[in-house]
Length: 159
Image 1 (cartoon, rainbow, N blue to C red):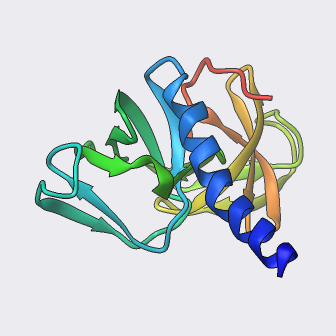
Image 2: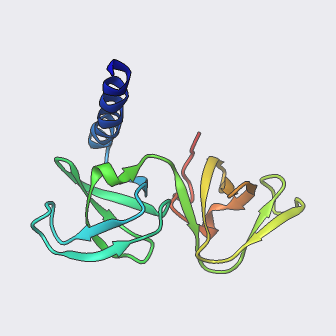
Image 3: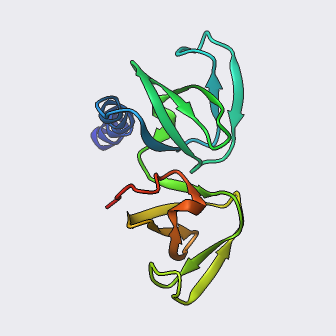
């Protein structure tokens, strides 16, 4: 019985700790949706109406404002609103934008192309630097130029 109580307590405290860590970050910063469904609201509270419902875990968002346990975010389409911090993750993801992108074996435009990714594809990003990011889409990975991604700044370094 003690073990169940401890596991339950950890399950409650971990998301709260992640939300507290987010609140100390300098805005703007990047997050991703961690929930199966997340409502974008017109204000920072459940009494504000929802303007959008996200059903895409992993979708990258840019946090532009913090208010208690709510985050004002911008999505890849430029839509802005408020989401409860507990529905967000610090897992860095990005979405392919513009034209079809190429995942290269190395961070070099002359390197062998391992995969191609269509606009709208979301993946996890790893190390980024010098205009390139490691990009993983369900185990298929490679390097992509940051200009093909929304979720990381072109000149940003990510470790």
